[in-house]
Image: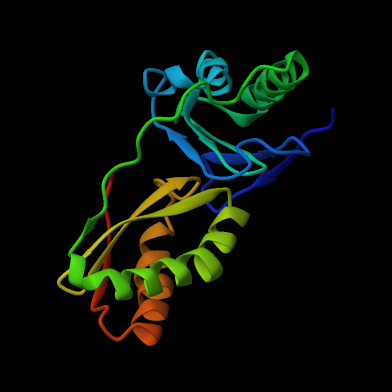
Length: 185
Protein backbone atom coordinates (compact mmCIF):
# COMPACT_ATOMS: atom_id res chain seq x y z
CA UNK A 1 0.00 0.00 0.00
CA UNK A 2 1.39 3.41 -1.00
CA UNK A 3 0.11 6.46 0.86
CA UNK A 4 0.78 9.88 -0.64
CA UNK A 5 1.00 13.01 1.47
CA UNK A 6 0.26 16.60 0.53
CA UNK A 7 0.70 19.86 2.37
CA UNK A 8 -2.31 22.10 3.00
CA UNK A 9 -2.65 25.86 3.45
CA UNK A 10 -2.71 25.14 7.20
CA UNK A 11 0.91 24.47 8.26
CA UNK A 12 -0.25 22.32 11.19
CA UNK A 13 -2.17 20.00 8.86
CA UNK A 14 -1.15 17.32 6.34
CA UNK A 15 -3.36 15.44 3.89
CA UNK A 16 -2.83 11.68 3.54
CA UNK A 17 -4.10 9.88 0.41
CA UNK A 18 -4.24 6.08 0.81
CA UNK A 19 -5.11 5.51 -2.85
CA UNK A 20 -8.73 4.46 -2.37
CA UNK A 21 -11.95 5.28 -0.59
CA UNK A 22 -11.78 6.43 2.99
CA UNK A 23 -15.35 7.62 3.61
CA UNK A 24 -16.62 7.31 0.05
CA UNK A 25 -19.57 9.66 0.37
CA UNK A 26 -19.61 12.15 3.21
CA UNK A 27 -17.02 13.30 5.70
CA UNK A 28 -16.31 13.01 9.40
CA UNK A 29 -14.46 15.54 11.55
CA UNK A 30 -13.07 14.60 14.97
CA UNK A 31 -11.71 17.34 17.22
CA UNK A 32 -10.79 14.97 20.07
CA UNK A 33 -10.14 11.33 20.91
CA UNK A 34 -13.46 11.22 22.76
CA UNK A 35 -15.33 12.35 19.64
CA UNK A 36 -13.53 9.66 17.61
CA UNK A 37 -14.99 6.70 19.49
CA UNK A 38 -17.19 5.68 16.53
CA UNK A 39 -14.20 5.52 14.16
CA UNK A 40 -11.53 2.85 14.70
CA UNK A 41 -9.27 4.70 12.24
CA UNK A 42 -9.60 8.08 13.97
CA UNK A 43 -9.18 6.43 17.39
CA UNK A 44 -5.94 4.77 16.24
CA UNK A 45 -4.66 8.10 14.95
CA UNK A 46 -5.55 9.92 18.17
CA UNK A 47 -3.57 7.25 20.06
CA UNK A 48 -0.44 8.76 18.51
CA UNK A 49 1.18 11.50 20.60
CA UNK A 50 0.77 14.85 18.86
CA UNK A 51 -2.42 14.26 16.85
CA UNK A 52 -4.85 17.11 17.61
CA UNK A 53 -7.58 16.62 14.97
CA UNK A 54 -8.60 13.96 12.43
CA UNK A 55 -10.74 14.63 9.37
CA UNK A 56 -11.92 11.79 7.12
CA UNK A 57 -12.80 12.77 3.55
CA UNK A 58 -13.99 10.80 0.55
CA UNK A 59 -10.53 9.55 -0.44
CA UNK A 60 -8.22 11.26 2.04
CA UNK A 61 -7.39 11.70 5.72
CA UNK A 62 -6.36 15.06 7.10
CA UNK A 63 -4.35 15.18 10.31
CA UNK A 64 -3.76 18.33 12.35
CA UNK A 65 -0.85 18.13 14.76
CA UNK A 66 -0.53 19.83 18.13
CA UNK A 67 1.73 22.88 18.45
CA UNK A 68 4.26 20.83 20.42
CA UNK A 69 4.69 18.16 17.73
CA UNK A 70 6.92 18.12 14.64
CA UNK A 71 5.88 16.49 11.38
CA UNK A 72 9.33 14.96 11.09
CA UNK A 73 8.55 12.51 13.91
CA UNK A 74 4.74 12.36 13.65
CA UNK A 75 4.35 11.74 9.91
CA UNK A 76 5.94 8.22 9.87
CA UNK A 77 3.75 7.20 12.81
CA UNK A 78 0.60 8.45 11.04
CA UNK A 79 1.56 6.61 7.84
CA UNK A 80 2.09 3.40 9.85
CA UNK A 81 -1.26 3.70 11.64
CA UNK A 82 -3.17 4.35 8.41
CA UNK A 83 -1.46 1.45 6.63
CA UNK A 84 -2.06 -0.94 9.53
CA UNK A 85 -5.74 0.04 9.68
CA UNK A 86 -6.45 -0.55 5.98
CA UNK A 87 -4.33 -3.73 5.72
CA UNK A 88 -6.27 -5.17 8.68
CA UNK A 89 -9.55 -4.42 6.87
CA UNK A 90 -11.14 -2.56 9.77
CA UNK A 91 -14.12 -0.26 9.20
CA UNK A 92 -13.49 3.49 9.02
CA UNK A 93 -16.76 4.32 10.82
CA UNK A 94 -18.71 1.85 12.96
CA UNK A 95 -21.94 3.81 13.28
CA UNK A 96 -23.36 6.98 11.85
CA UNK A 97 -24.06 9.82 14.22
CA UNK A 98 -26.78 12.31 13.37
CA UNK A 99 -25.60 15.47 11.69
CA UNK A 100 -26.19 18.79 13.39
CA UNK A 101 -29.52 20.35 12.56
CA UNK A 102 -29.75 23.04 9.93
CA UNK A 103 -31.28 26.37 10.89
CA UNK A 104 -33.52 27.18 7.92
CA UNK A 105 -36.91 28.85 7.67
CA UNK A 106 -39.38 26.81 5.57
CA UNK A 107 -40.00 29.75 3.23
CA UNK A 108 -36.25 29.83 2.39
CA UNK A 109 -36.15 26.26 1.02
CA UNK A 110 -35.63 27.35 -2.61
CA UNK A 111 -32.82 29.78 -1.70
CA UNK A 112 -31.17 27.13 0.50
CA UNK A 113 -31.28 24.64 -2.40
CA UNK A 114 -29.41 27.17 -4.57
CA UNK A 115 -26.84 27.80 -1.84
CA UNK A 116 -26.23 24.08 -1.28
CA UNK A 117 -25.88 23.46 -5.03
CA UNK A 118 -23.23 26.20 -5.31
CA UNK A 119 -21.40 24.89 -2.24
CA UNK A 120 -21.43 21.31 -3.59
CA UNK A 121 -20.33 22.17 -7.13
CA UNK A 122 -18.01 25.16 -6.70
CA UNK A 123 -16.74 25.30 -3.13
CA UNK A 124 -16.47 21.80 -1.66
CA UNK A 125 -14.25 20.37 -4.44
CA UNK A 126 -11.72 23.18 -3.98
CA UNK A 127 -11.81 22.92 -0.19
CA UNK A 128 -11.42 19.12 -0.39
CA UNK A 129 -8.34 19.68 -2.54
CA UNK A 130 -6.82 21.47 0.45
CA UNK A 131 -7.76 18.64 2.84
CA UNK A 132 -10.95 20.02 4.30
CA UNK A 133 -14.67 20.38 3.91
CA UNK A 134 -17.33 23.00 4.39
CA UNK A 135 -20.72 22.08 5.81
CA UNK A 136 -23.93 24.09 5.48
CA UNK A 137 -25.44 24.78 8.93
CA UNK A 138 -28.13 27.34 8.23
CA UNK A 139 -29.60 30.39 6.49
CA UNK A 140 -31.53 33.08 8.35
CA UNK A 141 -32.13 36.75 7.57
CA UNK A 142 -29.74 36.67 4.60
CA UNK A 143 -26.85 35.15 6.57
CA UNK A 144 -25.40 31.78 5.50
CA UNK A 145 -23.84 29.82 8.36
CA UNK A 146 -21.06 27.40 7.44
CA UNK A 147 -18.84 25.05 9.43
CA UNK A 148 -15.23 24.55 8.30
CA UNK A 149 -13.74 21.07 8.81
CA UNK A 150 -10.42 19.29 8.39
CA UNK A 151 -7.49 21.43 7.26
CA UNK A 152 -9.86 24.39 6.97
CA UNK A 153 -10.67 24.33 10.68
CA UNK A 154 -8.19 26.66 12.31
CA UNK A 155 -6.44 27.51 9.04
CA UNK A 156 -5.09 31.06 9.00
CA UNK A 157 -6.66 31.70 5.59
CA UNK A 158 -10.12 30.23 6.37
CA UNK A 159 -11.62 33.60 7.34
CA UNK A 160 -10.43 35.14 4.06
CA UNK A 161 -11.76 32.13 2.15
CA UNK A 162 -15.18 32.54 3.79
CA UNK A 163 -15.46 36.30 3.50
CA UNK A 164 -13.77 37.08 0.20
CA UNK A 165 -14.28 33.87 -1.72
CA UNK A 166 -17.43 32.09 -0.64
CA UNK A 167 -19.40 35.15 0.49
CA UNK A 168 -18.70 37.07 -2.75
CA UNK A 169 -19.60 34.06 -4.91
CA UNK A 170 -22.85 33.34 -3.03
CA UNK A 171 -23.87 37.02 -3.07
CA UNK A 172 -23.25 37.11 -6.83
CA UNK A 173 -25.41 34.07 -7.64
CA UNK A 174 -27.99 34.30 -4.84
CA UNK A 175 -29.15 37.89 -4.27
CA UNK A 176 -30.87 36.93 -0.99
CA UNK A 177 -27.46 36.26 0.59
CA UNK A 178 -26.17 39.23 2.57
CA UNK A 179 -23.27 37.64 4.47
CA UNK A 180 -21.52 34.38 5.35
CA UNK A 181 -20.37 33.52 8.85
CA UNK A 182 -18.49 30.62 10.32
CA UNK A 183 -20.01 28.49 13.08
CA UNK A 184 -17.90 26.19 15.20
CA UNK A 185 -20.22 23.18 15.34
